[in-house]
Image (cartoon, rainbow, N blue to C red):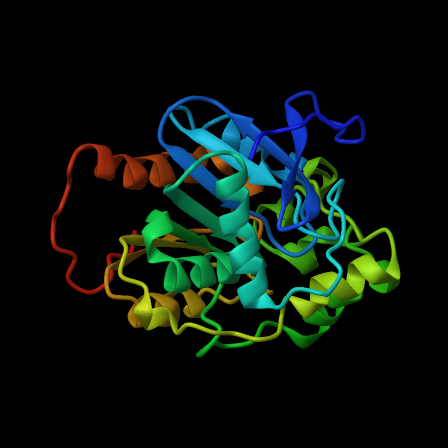
Length: 280
């Protein structure tokens, strides 16, 4: 399917494509092995900017999910498996058969669905600030309530207590992260629908996987990363000391080399056996 420009996709390098019948804002940047980026529940395209700028050597494919930014809404709200199929449709729309996949937070659960149900589409997998949909430890209740009711409690108020990590020390960073409440009630309900319908157990994922977490994440406590990695066949864990839920975006200089090094192992034909989980 060809990419067609659309005047409402308000980033210079972004265009609209039709994915499963939905006008979807997609941005492809750089050259190299394709890397599909799957954002968390309220994140827009621009949230990836700090990380992409440090991930040289990859063709990054980022998109606004249904109900987010400049992407439309499907006729029927999508469940988690449906969002996995939607991510696969993004690859189809830009002509990519197989890619590395990086999913963060809720997007990490979508990435697991894609890898479990369409393993032929995924080369290497990076799961950041996320958890298994089968076994997990919940975050702080007050923080989770703020996250699922963004217009009532606000995503910007006291960002340190919401996101943890570097934002506790430098809350002004929150203004540079592309997170905001949905524009309408239908958009909000469409995003929440993605929290339903888990299919495909994580232990069915066999591709090499990097599980990345901060040790100060009030939304998805870091113990979840070890639980998640223990369910995977071929995983390692990297813990960022002092990192919070938004560690990919508030500390890109720390995490980008870890991600690049892991993904570049594929290009070097690195097939070292991974016994257990390696914690950095």
